[in-house]
Length: 375
Ligand code: TV1
Ligand code: CA
Ligand code: ZN
Image (cartoon, rainbow, N blue to C red; front, side, top):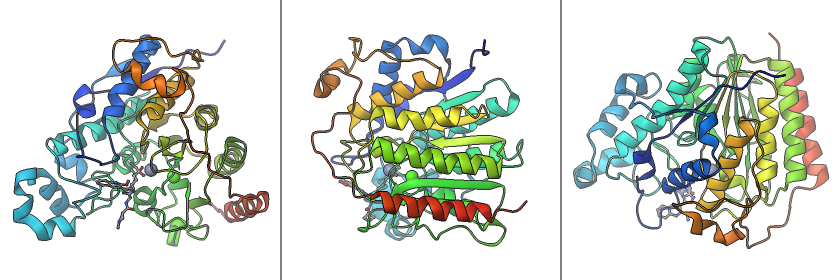
C-alpha cells in the first residue's frame, strides 16, 4: 500500500479571464476550461486546492532586473504610446502585448509556482500543480514569446534553498530558453528541453551542441526534433534521456513544464503526440518519487489543452479518467470537436520527419555528454 499522494493545485478564475488580444494564440481561457474539466471529473476532491497569492516585485527581482520589473509595474494599455523606446527595449508588443491586468496576471501565475514550491519545501505536499505557470521564455530584463515573468526560474531558485540539485524538464514544443539561460553557468540546475528545432521555429535556440558553459558545462541538455514526432519515438527518447539524467545527476527535486503545444492538432505546434504519450512523460517523472512542481506552458488548441492538463492532473493523482467526457455546465460543447472524447482533436496529419537514425544520433550524443558529468 503506497501512501496517498498529497497534491496541491493552484487556480484563480481571474487568471483565466485575461485576454492577450484579438487573434493572439495565447488564450488564458484554456485555464478555466481545464479547471472545469477537472471539476467535471471530480478530481478536485483529491486535490489540495489553493488560490495563488499575488507575488511581489521583490520576489520578481530575485531573477528579473529592477528596471524591467519597474516598467511592468507602471505600463498600462493606454500609456504604451508614451513609452515606445522602453516597449522595444523590453521586447513588449506583438508577441507580448500589454493588456488590462497584465501585472496581476504575472503576479498570480508566478505566485502559484512559488507557493507550490514552498509547500514542497515545507514537506506538506509531494506534488504541486500550476497549469497557469510554465512561462519559460521570459528573460532577466526582457519579455519573450508570450512570457513576461519567468515563474519557472523563480520556482527553481526557491527549490535551491532546500535542494543541492534541481532538474528542469520541458516538453513544450518550444525550446525552454529562458530557464536554460538563467542556469547556463551552474551545475546545481540541469535543464532538459525537448523541442522542435530548425526552419526558424521560435526561438531558434537549443541545438544539440548547446550544453552549458563554465561550471554549467554538460548541465544543459537539448533534444532538438523535427516535425511530426509521434508517441512511440518521443516517449522512448524521453525515457531514455530522463533515466540517464536522473541516474547521473541525482536531483533532489523536479520541475516539469508540460506545454501542451507538443500535442497533435496544435494551432502553432507541429508534433504528433497523443494525450497518452504526453501523459506518459508526466507519469515517468512522477515515478522517481521526488518533490515535483508541474506547470503548464504553451498549448493553442484550447479543447486539447484542457483535456491534456485535466488528464495529467489525474495521472499525478494516480487515477485513470473515463474516455467519454462527463457532461458539465461550462464549456462542454468545446469537446464536440473530438466527439466528446478524451483524445486530441487533430484534423491534419503531420508526417514524422524524425528518422530512427536521427533519433539514435541524438540519444548517443546526449549519452556521451552525460558521461562527462563530474561531481
Ligand atoms: C498577435 C496576433 C501575436 C497573432 C503571435 C506564433 C501573434 C503569433 C499572432 C506567434 C501568432 C510566435 C515568433 C517572430 C518572434 C516571433 C508559453 C520575430 C499565429 C510558452 C511563443 C511563440 C511560444 C512565439 C510560447 C512566436 C510557449 N509563434 N499569431 N508568435 N518574431 N514568435 O515567431 O513556448 O508556448 O501565430
Ligand atoms: Ca521544450
Ligand atoms: Zn510552446
